[in-house]
Every structure is written in C-alpha cells, then in structure tokens.
Length: 123
Image (cartoon, rainbow, N blue to C red; front, side, top):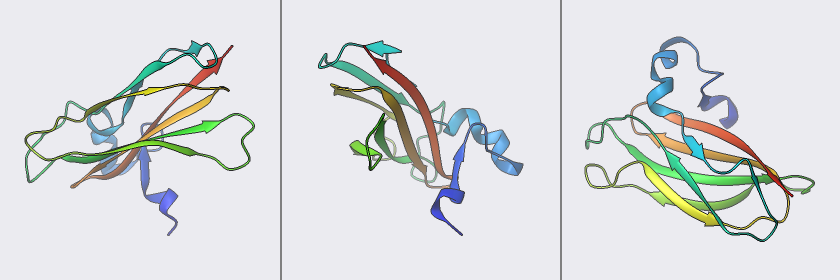
C-alpha cells in the first residue's frame, strides 16, 4: 500500500475514520491573499482532541506546494509535541513569492496520519 493511501483527509475519510474527522483534520488559518515578500502567520490547530500519554497528537508538519514549482511540496516546518504538556497548535511565520496550497499533516498515536489544506494567493 502506498503511503498516500494511509493519510486521512476530511473528505476522504471512510468507515471508522468518519467519526474522527472533526478532531483529527488539521485546520489551517491564514489569509486568502497576501503580497509577495510580506510576512504573515500560518496557524495550524488540531482538535478538540485528547492530550494524554495514551492518546495524543505527536507531531504536526507544514508544507507548501508553490504554483509552478517543478518539485513540490516544500517543507515549511515540523513540530514534535509532547503529550500532556504541548497542545496541538502551532504558528509559523512565512513569506511567499508565489501562491499555492498549504498542507498540514498531523500524527495521532491512535488514529494515524491526517492532512488538511488551504489555498493562498499572492498578488
């Protein structure tokens, strides 16, 4: 099985995963449009989700698929999270030259890999 087939998304979840969509799909908050070379924040949250040693979000990664780029995506950042202490919320400050799509991926130690996306325009 390909790794891509193991990543759940809100729209592609099926079976048992349907009930897990709200608490596991990463939510990306960012402006719909920005100016080139202008810094802005991208916030990724997961949840509501338990945060115990037995059941928690262990990491969040942020990628950007830039329009017209030959090899996508670019990894923007990766964040390891410690159960109980670290909440599944990260903010990364970025600057873009071109528009594209942000992708956020998270790993839940019980329910696997989940991905969310958000398009952004530069102009």
